[in-house]
Length: 262
Length: 320
Image (cartoon, rainbow over all chains, first blue to last red; front, side):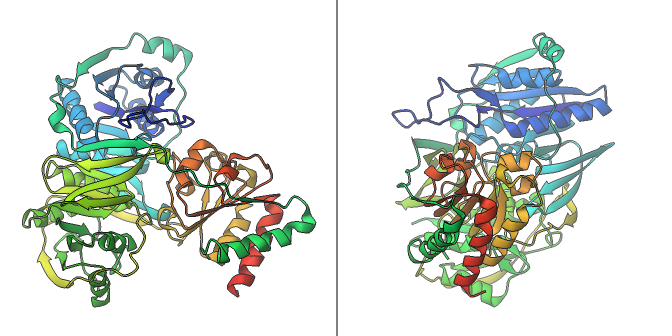
């Protein structure tokens, strides 16, 4: 059984984003990179499947820059068997990334039984790659999954939609599934795991190796800028219990007369 | 002038409001609507009022409930029979799942979660937030047509006096094709409230809520003002609320008219997810909490004392 997990390396959630002076992207020099948080759930789910099917092989695939390989090493330290890195700029669009992932999976020589990803990467927040990859591979897919059971070749998954309602899908493998928070609790990499990960095979490919060129770009970004700052608001002290009602009544009044939102 | 198709997500015969936001903003282009299933004449009239020319109702076997493949197959076949430059849809749960797959059937690009756009000589240019709203960028599309765009609900707003279209409704025979991933069951949410991403008013609780039971006071406030209740990551990770309620970079990005943050300190990843709310009220006992830098109205005080008073004052104001 071949399981592929597609991961992305993204700026840590605490990162302050600074656009480059020409607005073409963001400053990346001093960023702390982490595995995309949603991808951790995908890695964990692959490892849970491997626990139940010890013969399974888990390959993690990433398309991105080689500044560091934190995300792939983390995944292998958690227990993935091997990794593929397709060297690419960090601002590639979803179509190019999906095509590169398809190419990398093809190059591995392994036929996928299950492809897991996070539901979105928290950098470009596009929510596109899993579905594009599935369509390119002509596979069924379910995104935003919070429940997963595998029996033989049938996956039963729960997809979270608006308001927390769940759609329960049944589909045969091979398929592409995109994980949401809540699917499982990702394990921490153990120290022996981290040591072992250093010796696990990491194959490096170029975009040309996986058949992707500039002509595959579909979405062009420019003019990166910070959102406009709000003018400072009004602050009221209601620490004194005797003043609370007066302050609250004043704010409620302003919401109607000044802000006109209620 | 661009020839545009708007995919209208419909449930129980009603189209999602984001459809009308998109149509209103498309004034000056030719806009048709396609939807799966049926809607009433009143709903068609609503679409027409906001600018829809033709309303295509796609009907066929195995399209009674959503499936990514069935919907994508049916819409792709229909779109191929026409000559659209652009296909728009809402960046809803369904839109986010469906549109990337549909676009790929045309080897085409999708600009997702766009919050504003213009057409210059028939060419689309949009604005979208990245890094959960920590920055904005211009987004354009290239490559095979039609080009696809998904629009974040609540971002464009309704057009006050839209240019009406003819709203000619026609039935279209649609083919769902081969469906491998099907919905076997739908488990309804405990709450019947509108989703955070579509809510007009949101009341959010942070770590200072201390436990899940205390969210009761937020629910009471929310009931009075018709709000949906959210939670910060700290509150979700502490087990006070489910992840479906999380606002922020690893939760939902929201843009309501009114956002009331109760006991939320305002971590950068939370601020990113709610900073585009039109009006922000923050209640926090720490006068230096970062949330106050984004608040239009900040109240320094104990939320357990303030929130019930706030509920009462809103009741008075709204005559409840």
